[in-house]
Length: 118
Length: 116
Image (cartoon, helix red, strand yellow):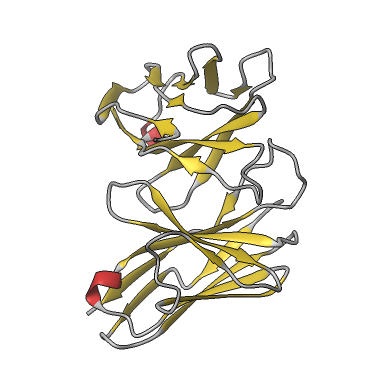
């Protein structure tokens, strides 16, 4: 159980294109999902917390107009990289967990999206 | 201040040997949880093991065990009988009770390469 699906897994596109990444919880409901960015050989950097039915909470330094997050339902959050440029190339990964309120509840991750902007 | 510290350089481990990955954490909460994740080169994050701050016994999960030393604020991961498939980045993470929303703080990771 607790499967998170992320799509697409790989995107290559031209500079100026907007790219949408989907994150779905397949067998549980998630009022909160998280979006991370990861550079090679580095840790996960939290970009934003996606809240179902309300605005996302962005981390300091993350441009909310560049990285649009929509949490349309209890099983789907999307990240749109608007007008992407080569510096936006990175590995983006989402996570979610059933809201149990328990400390021992792990976050479950999607398989990530490798974004390359030419 | 960093909440999770992983400072070991990349490690080479002989197949079938055990390896210990260090993790220290910083929190003033009494109630918190510690997690270890594995990230192979393909990129997915795989949950390995959990240790709660009130757990009296060290957590174990198959070949994974946690050496939890609360007073030292350390939660080292031990992988026994290493296999080639254990080659990956390993991340230690912490959830604090007052974080809310199930947020995790991640360390910088340990790179492990298992050699035959």
